[in-house]
Image (tube, rainbow, N blue to C red):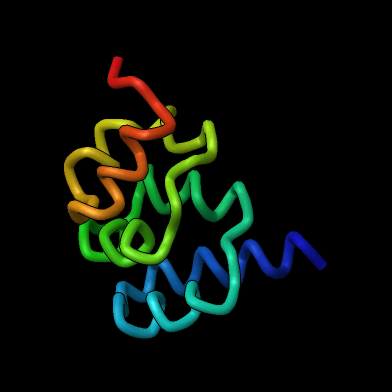
Length: 87
């Protein structure tokens, strides 16, 4: 089931429809594999959509710190800085 969900989420990321993606993220969360795919191969618009509805308190965000700093809005960056140091 989770494998199927990840495949669906990766397809959504590949579709590059940021508005639909953002709507989806408001009620559902991405699997770890889908998040990794997003940060490695997703477009800037899709990363921005993800970051605009996510709270970057998870350690996973430290792994993709460059992308978070580059694409996050002010509110998300402030939250990130509260929980993580920049490396």
